[in-house]
Length: 143
Image (cartoon, rainbow, N blue to C red; front, side, top):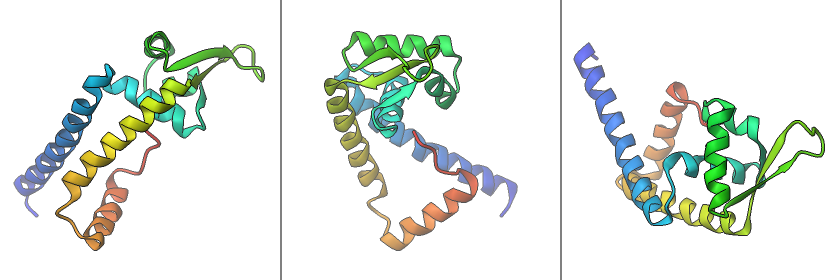
C-alpha cells in the first residue's frame, strides 16, 4: 500500500470515528451531558458503580483538578455522589446514584444503537475480522 493510500485509510477511519462521536453526542444532547461526562459515568458504571477520583483522572488522561470539575457537574445533576474512601481517607470515592445508573443505561443504549447502525453493513465474520485488526492498532479500553 502506498503512503497516500495509507493516509486515505486513516482518513476513512477518522471519518468513521467522527460519525460514531456525532451519533453519541446527538444522543447525549437531550440528557444535558458532555462527552467527557458520559465517559466518566461509563467508567464508574464499569467499576461496579464506584471509582476513586484519582482513577477517574488517570483513565480520562486529565489532572485531578479537572476530574473534580467533571465529577462536580455530575454531582450537581444528581448523577453521582462523592464520599471519603473508608479504606483510604485521603481518597474520594465517586458512586453512581440511581438517576446516574438510569442515565448511564440510556446512554449505553444510544451508543449501542449508533454502533449497530454504522456496523450494519458488515457480516459477523467481517466484524470479527475488524475487531482483530483494531486490536493490533488500538487495544480495547475500559471507557
